Amino acid sequence: MDKKLRDLNDVDKVLKEKSDDENIEPRKGRRHTAMHNDVFDIDELKGMLVIPAIVIVLMIIIVILDRDPSTEVKADNTPKPQTETAAVPETTVEETEDPTIVREYHDEYLTAFFEKFFDARLNSDVDTLYELTGVTNQTPEQSELLKSQLQTQAGYIESYSNIRQYAVNALEENSRLVFVTYDVKFRRVDTLAPGIMYCYVKVNDSNQFEIIENLSPDQTKFVNEYITSHEEVQELINTTNSNLLQAITSDERLAVIYDAFQSGRIYTDSQEAIDSQVSLIAIDGNEVVTEPATEAAEETEAENEAGTETGAVIENTSETESQSQ
Image (cartoon, rainbow, N blue to C red; front, top):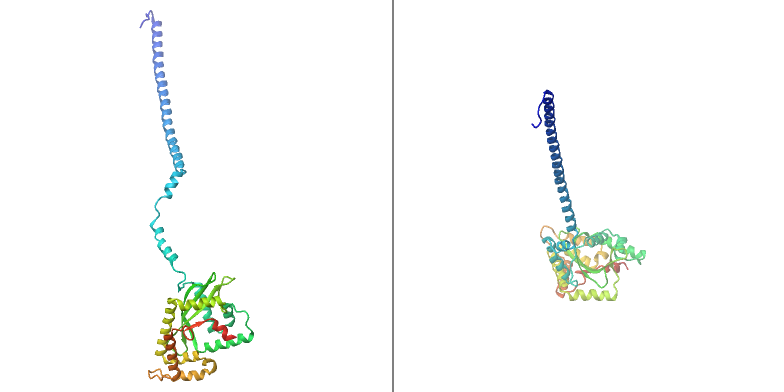
């Protein structure tokens, strides 16, 4: 203490000054602490702001990379999945198939078309047959004659089944030469009779299948040459021929009915007369071979050996119209 104490007043002053100094120091300490705390809060806030800034920068980089053309090219050059390349051989096989070779034709619309055709024959539905064949020039007398013939046939035929189509491209666009195989179930006969017919089919202006009845000279030439020059067609005809011969020779009841159809006797003889011949064939195994049945089997066998495609074995749908004229 530099000051000299002369009396009590001086002592009081000294004590008062000391007290003031002690109060000043803590306040300075508190101010220093407060300032330190303020600095700490600012630093901490800066750290918290740095993290969102980094996230934003990373997001911008990701967006830029996504838009980078070089990245898109690399994605396009990546190998394709195995499931995509597996379908290529099937497409190649279909494209390399010879379109001039007749083959079984799987088309639900064409199948439905021929089912409708055979149903119309069984139901003697002349109007539907004319619609399916594009015939419009028939007189009422011709229509009635065709209907009468179909009704006669329906008296012997119970159903058509196992209808299958074999087709090849024809001369015009959207046209086909179609070979149709089927089985005929005659009434009171258990054995099915195989049959085959050909028809020239096109897609008409209404986008519907239609059988061309009156073939042009070029179309007729195409059909005849195709039937005689293609082995697969000859094989199809011969197979049907053989199956038909086997059916006739194994079932004499079928042979009688078949002969009546082939000879046209179903239109000249009464159904009772033909049925009486069928009734002669015993069901207990003691078959009686009638002369017409024998002749039918022999004629069919001769046609098979000669390799003909006409008559009983292969039928042209234009026969339906010719019968009505």
